[in-house]
Image 1: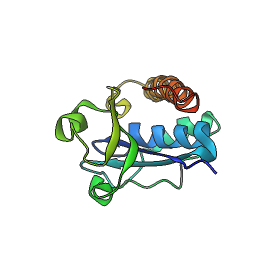
Image 2: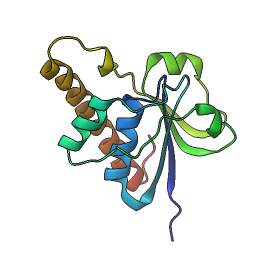
Image 3: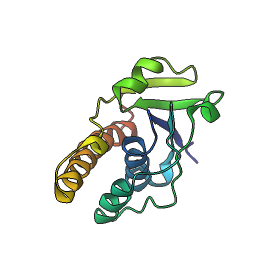
Image 4: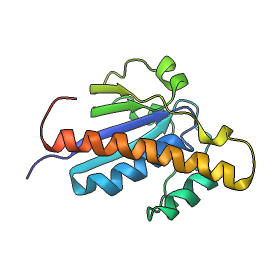
Length: 146
């Protein structure tokens, strides 16, 4: 049996982008991927619009929790991905990472406007992360280097 690919996604609050990525990796990576997410300064909650817009995509992240990066510091991962610039600046090198990627992604929780405008910002973040995740999963499955 092939070992699972271990992935850690990091952002600042671990409430939006990294939670969305965790759900997308779990959905698209299936049993071949072991996915975790964490924050450099976790908020302690998953943003309600992240949950709502992921459910629209058919992916339920309601049971995911906001976690601190410190619980993963002694673990190793095949990929560590930062999805926000602040987290990348705080953690430019993760000691247990075989491969480290930075996917600069705007924080949809800062979107303003109507409820629909704010949801659209989350939908755009989901689309952007989903494209990157599917590309990475495809590369992993074909054993090409990233």
